Image 1 (cartoon, rainbow, N blue to C red):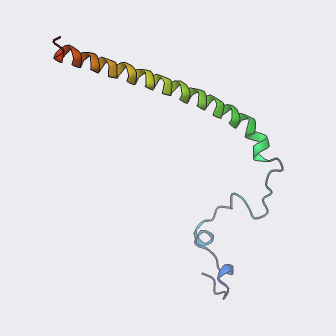
Image 2 (image 1 turned 30 degrees about the vertical axis):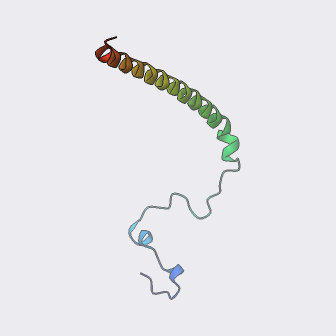
Image 3 (image 1 turned 135 degrees about the vertical axis):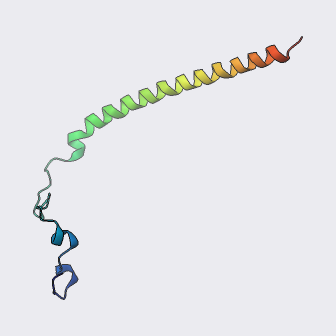
Length: 83
């Protein structure tokens, strides 16, 4: 490490062992357009699709559970119901 007295001026582990340049230098400018403006419509469409798929899936689970419980009920009644 460097012999500077201020800790913030000392070199870090990455500075000592990593010889590759920084992927985003300190003067890196952020894009001028906002992320919301750029990807907002696509994200909203994705949420709409996800919501419809989840709704359809839950309907299938509900129907399957209903049919399964009635099947069990019918099997139980056939074995025990000697009316």
